[in-house]
Length: 401
Image 1: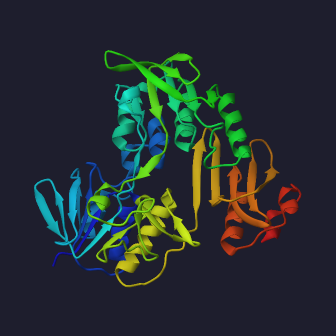
Image 2: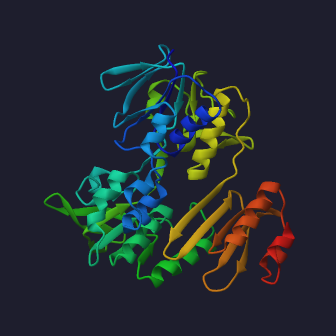
Image 3: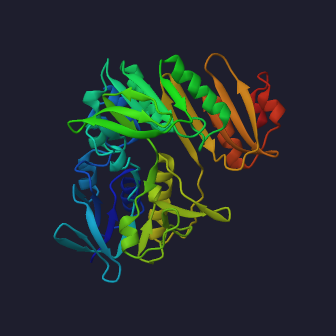
């Protein structure tokens, strides 16, 4: 009996194999990961772990012995090099493993700077894996100077940690404003002010022309406006791309990731996919979500469907970001909004409510867990409160339910 193989030992892979066992699957399960470490949380890497506030063991999603107790074979530090759908095998190293069912939870890969502009210099880091952060950590110390390339959430979170550690931080964003791709101008304004209050030099509408190196190490940067900076290290936060190379080589259909149906099945009936790497049907189009909640929920849904549940995945999108003493919580998807309703609270508390016409689409809530929770419930229930009531600080949000 060949059993089930899951490629990708991150949040989605760990969730999928555990759900298979919980749902009563008794066959062999093998979870394969390219990294030499048991599945772990990624969000704390660039925050609590980099700050030294979280020990390595606390990153682990589950202790290693839990996988053994569930009779799940872990193959770590062994990247899969090929999938043969016709033979129903995967190759890792010099070994070939057979499967009855295969699930791809390969996640995503960070976009890197081209070598032509200095992206291959020493001291240039991305923030994705434990190894990335361990390599960066010795540089993130008081008195150092860093350039952060990219004003999305990854770049801003890295900026916050570096600034808290006493690093002199310059952040460049090629677009007109930080967070332009993912958030309203109001949210951009909020976080720009927050970072500048902590001494971060944010330069918008300015790209990186090239990095300058000495003896193979980054020592400076030339920006798009012609200015130059002396830097000790660089953090690249210019987005991620779904990890689809294995799927593409195996001939699976791709569409902004590995294309799956509502159940999570790919174009090959024996191969499934879940998490960051997969795009699924959503409101007449296709959607791919990059978030921990989606990785867990999608993986668990796919695991149940692998065992015959026949239940389409319905996402309930939510996200978060921690920067300094501000916790941003996001509910819903803001694509297509045409109006922002602002609700102010005390101090740093605020929320921005995204509407399309009279329909509530999403909420960005800063240090406002109540606004976030009620917004999330309203969105999931398909309810859209009166914008004027939302904006009125005297309104008890719970009354909008």
